[in-house]
Amino acid sequence: MGGIFSSAKPTLDLVDLKGKVIVVTGGNSGIGYETIKILAKQGAKVYMAARNESRVIGAISKLEHEGVPAGSVHWLKLDLGDPRQAKKAAEELITKEKRVDVLINNAAIIDVPFELTSDGLSQTMVTNYLSPFVFTKTLLPLLKQTASLPGSDVRIVNVSSKGHNFIGTENNERPRFDSVEAFNKTFGDGWKGTLKRYAWSKLAQILYTRRLQRELKASATPITVIAIHPGEIKTSGVILKSDVPWYISFLYGLAMLLSFKSVEYGGYTPAFAAASKEIAANKDKFAGVYLEPYGKIVKGSKWARNDELGDELWTTTEKIVEGLGL
Image (cartoon, rainbow, N blue to C red; front, side, top):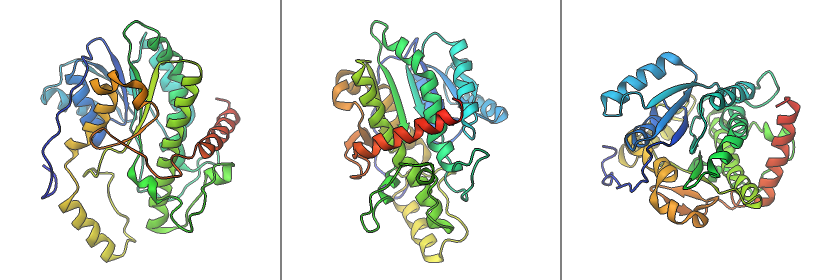
């Protein structure tokens, strides 16, 4: 169980996933692992898209020990640290499968210092947003093909964070995604900068979700795109840097104790977004939305709902991707 005041486990009413193919990035631990457990038990063939083979093998073995049918979870080598590798992984999957019903972009990095990749791009933004963008774009033809099949229910789920609300709170300044320099915004040094860079990438995920949904709707493509906050979950990624003041560490630790839930709760909202019957029956209602636990539609920050900012991000992202030759 989670904190002292944790609520009871929610009940998920999911569609039958037998014969369906699902991809979850970063699923060898934490929220992704719990999401895979739920969806594989529901009958799906799931690809655990991750970089480290030995960790994946260990995770699959553990899943089977926890009741996931043997042979239902497979490894897809995916390194989100480089958009080229993200494209390569998607291309490999396309050679293996004739359909993909659900893509869950779950993997992310949090507690890392500001660093530029060899392409001169923010590592946090590359891993949390740009590589998932490329991965999704490369898989989109197969997702669209699946969506054209009778009885299909194709969904793209982007795991964001409530932390996106941290952006734009100081002086109510409008965020900018109109250049590579804006894309690489550092937010300064120290733990505050680290957390804001993470929030920056998660704001991008929500804006991208809305923009991609509009793009698909314009072409009458029946794919539902959803962004989610999985909840305040105790995972290995939820840590604080050593330069955090003692009182912040104390308050954070207290919040972990009182309100953060154990990792098993982290899979519920992603699984809801991926396979709930409620969404299947109300696709227009859930198209392009942002969800918080457990499947509740929430507005998100005003900047996360700013479609002009979303268009700006989309344009800059496409230019970056084109510049990389992807």
